[in-house]
Image (cartoon, rainbow, N blue to C red; front, side, top):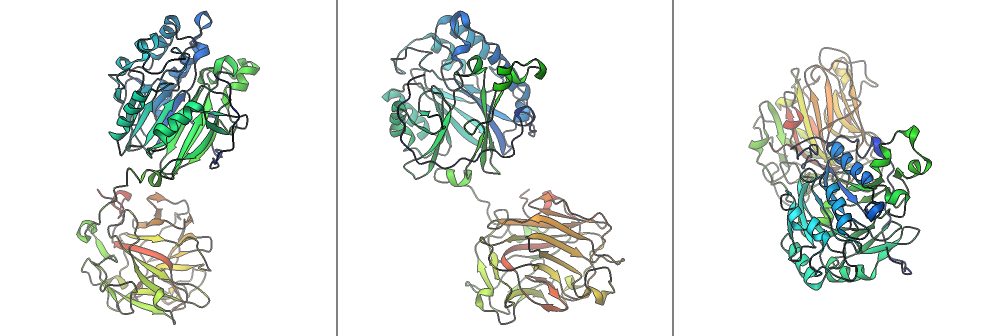
Length: 618
C-alpha cells in the first residue's frame, strides 16, 4: 500500500449496479452451468457456454505475515472454488500480487503450500507485488523466494500457460471460455523496458485475442470509488495498454479502497480499469475474492465480492465482524459492466459471419413452401420492388407470391434490403413500409390455384419467419399482420372467435409488440391463440410456429414462449384463398400493412424440432 495522490476528475462511463444478483451463496457460485470436459478434481468447466467466470484474488499479504500467518481463509477460498467450479463455470483464477507480507522463505513456503490445493485443478496466474520482492527493484531483480515458488516452472503443466518473460516475473495464459480464446497477461509490479517489449511481443503473437491485463500497481481510487492511474500505471498505460486495442479490462490490487474507471485508448475504445484490494478489512480481507461473470449473450460482466471462508460459517455462530464482511454489496464491489463484446472486439477479431445457404440445404422432408428474397427467390433488381414482382416458391410446389401494394401506397411500401438475420439462409430481406392513418403497405399473395391455399396440415406443421422491427418503432402499428390466410372464419362456420370477420389463421403484433398467433383448427369450433412477450426492436428475431397435430407451440429465437394454449388444435381451417406475407385481412379487406423487415419464410407440413429450424446449420 502506498499513499494516494490527489485525483483529478476522469471521464468514465457509468457502470450499472447489478439489479438482479442474489446473495452469493445462492447466485454466483450457485448458478447452474452446463458441464463439459472435466478438469482434474476441480469440477467440470464448460468452455463453450456463453456464461463463464474469472475469479480475482487480490492482496493476501496479511494472511502470510511471518509468525502471524493464517492460511485458513485462503484455504477455504480455494476449497470453495474447487467445490463450486462447475456451478459458477470458473474458467480461471488470477492473483493480483502481494501474496505475502515480506516475501520471506517462511511466508512464501506457506503460500506455496496453500496454492498446491488448486495446482492442476483450476488454471491460475500469480504475479509479484512489492511485498513479495524487494520493492525498489523491477522484473530484472534476479532470483527470489517468490520466483522459486511461483516462477514459470510452477505453471508449465497448466493447460492455459503460454509462457513467461526470460526473467520469469511476467507470464501469460491463453484460456478458452465462451466458445473463444482469451489472453490473460500477468505483469510484475514494476515492468522493465525489456519486460514491456516481451509483453508487446505476446500481444503481437496473439493479435486476434482479447486481453485481460493484470498487475499489482496500475490505478488507485478515492473514497467515492473513482479511480485514476497511478504514476506507474500511467507509464504502463502509455507504454503498452493504450496502443493495444486488445486490452479491454485491467485488474490491479495494491491500493485501497477499491474502485474503477473507464479510459479511452488510441482506437477510441473503452478500457475498463478496476482496483480490488481488501487487506484493510477484517482479517486481512478474509480471503475475499471477486467473481467476474461474463455473459456474452447479455453483453455484461457481473461482478460480486465475497469471502468463502466467512460464508462457510454457521450463520448463528458468526461474530458481528464476520457477518459484516462476508459479502460486499456497495457500488464498487457489486456491479455490472455493459460491453458489446462483438463490437468491442471487432477491430482485431471481426466476427466470422455464416455464409448464405442454398435453398436445397434448407428444404427438409415435408417442406410445403419456401420463400426467400435474394436473387434465388425474387426476380428483378434494384431497391424498389414493383407490383407484379414474383417471389418464387423454391420448393417448386407452385406457391409463388406476387407483390401487390395496398391502397395508394407509394414505392417505399416495399423495398429490397441486404439486412438479414445472422442465421438466415438468405442474406436478404424485404423492407415493408406499412402503417395506419392513412392505411398503407404492401403484401405478397399466392395465386388463386396455389396448393397452399387449401392445405389444412392436419398431421402437423411448422411455419417460420425472420422479422425485424425498426428502432425507433415510430407510429401506430397495432395489430399489423406478419402473415395470414385470407378469408373470414365466419364463412368457414366458426363462431367461437371475437369476430367472424377475422381470418382463419394469422400471425400479428399487438400494440405492446406481443406476438399473436390465432388459428381456427379443423374439426372443431375453437380459436386457440398463442401470445409471446414483447418482441425487441432494432434486431432480427426468428419466429417458429410448431403444431404436432394436437396443439401449437410458438418459439421465439429458439425458446418456447409461455402463453401457448393447451387446448386441442389440429390443422388449419382454410377456404382456398391466398396465403399472404405482409398483412392480415379483416372482413375480407386489408387496412395497414407490415412495418419492418421480413426475411426467409418456410412452411413444413410436420412438426420440426428446434434443431431443425432455419437457424440451424447442422
